Image 1: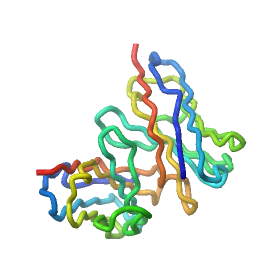
Image 2: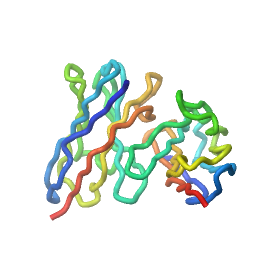
Image 3: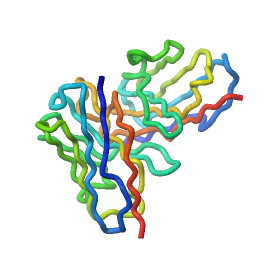
Length: 107
Length: 122
């Protein structure tokens, strides 16, 4: 099975800061990677699909990059409404696997 | 507008059974693969099971294989998860999730329901 790791596990940043989260797969997954946002008590929401494509309606301050085993998720200017946990997920192979999540809050 | 509404969660004793439902609307249900994903309290996301649009192909996580059964009724636009031999470690919020049309196995998700809580405890 493919294992997904994320770093950091949590971070605290100021409004307007650039925030970067990394995700690593245990083997090559090409670009079969999604990023989700989950706010407390809510369902996850798709932000980025196929590693770098912004889902319709998602603000452009969110972006993703990478392929193979190493991926990056960026919030270019952190906003108060971005407080959430962010998960990467591979869907190249069965079973699909999520990263452990990165909790983002405001400093 | 895509809507997914889960129901059927609740408190069940270890070894018991429960059937979850997910009512879908806002899209041509039979054209899309669907999955169940769960989240134990305070923990991360875990994929449980997927089913093709026709229902002819199903996939399971090793942790539930042989105990859970995914199915769908395309005439009712409803997805199901039959859960048998439940264990304490199955306690979680269970989400149904829709896959995009391009999905190979239904294991990437563009819409999620609000979830239903299953608690396995004596």
